[in-house]
Amino acid sequence: MARIRVRIARVPSVLALSLSTALALTATACGSDKADSADTSTSGQKNGDAPVVVATTTWEGAFAKAAGAKDVKVIVPPSAQHAPDYDPKPSDLAAVAGADFVLYAPFEPYAAKIKEAAGSDAKLVEVNLDNDADKASAEVSRLGKLFGTEDAAAKWDTAFKSEYGTLQKELKTAWPGGKAPAVVAQIFSVWSAKMTGAQVVGTYGPEAVTAQQLSDLAKKKPAHVFDNVHMTTGEVLPDSGAKQVEIVNYPGKDLDLLAVYKNAADTITKAMTS
Image (cartoon, rainbow, N blue to C red; front, side, top):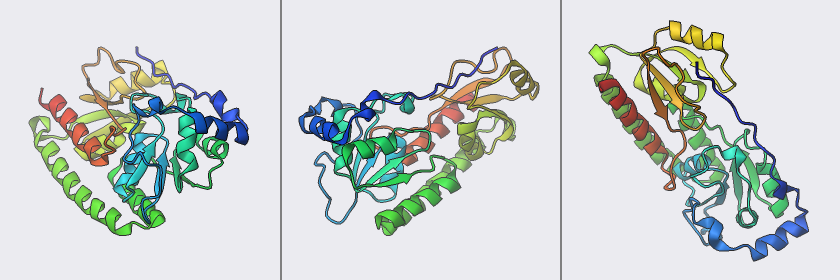
């Protein structure tokens, strides 16, 4: 039976640099590290009264963009499948040095050290990375108030709720036989099952799953397994007859949070109708 392994993030050695050394490195950093980063502004300067935001990943960056931030720099490239394994570069420190806010998640332990190493006066903000619709709306609203961009955040939230409702209706029409499917979901993919209206009969992760847990999940006879593509190690319930659906949580370079929901809905619809 398949097992799920969780990798433990390494603390990058570059973060042990002294403040003076870090600043010297940022002054000579080349621009090649930016090629794979999601960056809505490359100037590194204040955007009028709008905040300059540095986000550790595209996930935080998308929340910031949804909340109304226009000057957003993302440190971890979208190509990095497991963000906590990323080793920040001198150019990343340069980006942090000019920020008003640094957004991070609690499972990214290097965020505070990045800010310290760069000598930044930025406000460090922990973001609740959960794509559950209600939690996402609440987090965007919170960030909007923090940034002073409440109107932009409210406008995004209105559009999001409208589109989310549409996706829910479309997913419901794709239910096999008109009945909500029974699914097992990785703990960070439960939001997609909720959007689908599926019956969640079991969850797993993020810690390694035992053989007994997998046996118990298989006994639930789920029609689908909603896996987490960022932590997957292969087929979760082989030989069970359950179709595995790989759910993507992280937005792309465009930092479009809504696209995560649309892409998940398309993927799930194809799985239910194939």
